[in-house]
Structures are given as structure tokens and as C-alpha cells.
Length: 302
Ligand SMILES: *[C@@H]1O[C@H](CO)[C@@H](O)[C@H](O)[C@H]1NC(C)=O
Image (tube, rainbow, N blue to C red):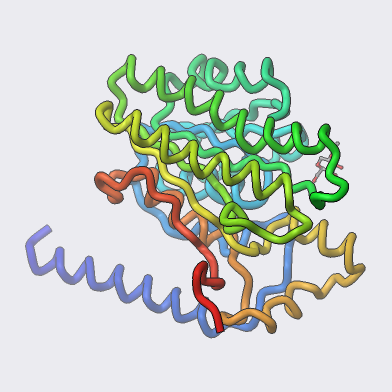
């Protein structure tokens, strides 16, 4: 392309992106669909060409959307880790529809043996992963006065221990193979303290936030990066199930949107945009960051 054609090409892409952003900003609140991530992974590129990724919690919600966005940007293979084979097969079919080989790895994040099998299974099919996304989480509720030890232990097993096991295995392989990869941990705004009914959940995610920084610090000389995203209240399939179960209201999402500053909850597509940036070389040397991704500002008050 000539320089002028190049500029024209770049500006038409920019105009396209701006008009799609405007379309998103002005559209009425989306009706919730648990079977389709929203917004659709429309940002196409080839920045992940030849690279492979492991995404836990990849069979629904935030994890599924990240997996699909990686595929839309040219990933050479994505393993989605989850417990539900039906949903796993569904996501693999969507990945392959986007031209990306997919692998479903069935594993429960509270089971050490199953978690330990994940990285070897990915490597047997795709070789050393360039990126790991720890998106699986247990969101069980519990108050200080009555959270059981069993519930506390499971929260820590799923939300802190599993990401540790996976990060250890994935980054040891990266170091050995000389791969300058990246890890992204999906955390929660609640890791700053959180609501009283999320006692064990908040503590386990606080552990993950600290682990993110400790791992990042250890891995930086190997040029492997590790970052986290503290996501706020998000419109995911799991949240939809929980809200309908608790409130019996199928229209909770619209009402919730009316109460928050930006008129809508965080959407899975918002998070995959940042997760993919952190997984890509575009984020440069950024490591050890835990980014608040919410419309509630920690430290602010009225
Ligand atoms: C697995 O996912 C499918 C599709 O979402 C759902 O119908 C089914 O109940 C799930 N199975 C289990 C055991 O949760």
C-alpha cells in the first residue's frame, strides 16, 4: 500500500470503529441472552496469529467471550476449561466457526488432579500456550457469622489455588520454551473488601490479586507478564441465573442498569477487550497491574 492509501485505510477503519462505538452507546439496553455473549466479538484482527491460549471458565460468560475474541483475532488454538461438556462442545463449535481450532478440557477447579492435567492436555494438542486466562470462579455467598469452613476452603481452592497451579505449570513451560507469554487473572472489585455477604469470596479474590503481583514480579526477567482485572457488576449468564433465582425478575438487568451511573452494567465484551489487550504485545511492558474495571470508584465518597 502507498502511504496515502495506508492513511486512508487506517482512517476508514477508525471511522468504522467509531461508528460502531456510537451505535453501542446510543442503543437501548440490550435484552439479555444467556446463549450469546454481548456484544458480539466483532473486532477482527490477526494479532494472535500462531498463538495458543488456555481460558478457564471458558464455557460461559466472561471466559467464553474472551475465548471467542481471541479466536476472532486469529488465535491458532484455544483450550476452554470447564465442567459442562455440552457447553464446552458449544463453545468449541463457535471457535471453529471463527476459524480457530478449539479444545474442551473438562476439569473442576476444586480438584487438584484435574487442574494439574489442564496445561499438559493443552500442550499435547497445541504446544506451549502463549497465554493463560484464569476466569473460572466460585461466587458462593457467605457471611462472617455463618460461612462454613467447607465453603471457605472451596472458594480458596477455585479462586486462588487453581490459578496458582495453572500459572505455575503454564509459565514453567513458557520459560523452558523461551515463550514471552502473558497471564490474565479475572478478579473482582470485591477484592478491595466487598459486601458483607461475600466474606469468603472477597478474601479468596484478594489472595488472587496479591498472587497476580507476586507472580508478575517473579516472572518479569523472563519477560512473561501477569495482570489482573477487578471486574465490577457484570451482565453474565451466571449473574442472570443468580438474579432470576433471587429476585424472580426476568427484567432485573434493565432495572439494574437504571441505578448505575453509566446506565448499564459491565458487559462481557468490555472485559474481553481489555483482557485481549493485556494478552497482546500492544500492552508492552505492563505487568503486575490489577485494574479496576467498574463504575464504582474505590476511595471516592459523597
Ligand atoms: C450443561 O449446560 C447445558 C446448556 O447450558 C444445560 O442445559 C445443562 O443443564 C448443564 N448441565 C449441568 C450438569 O449443569
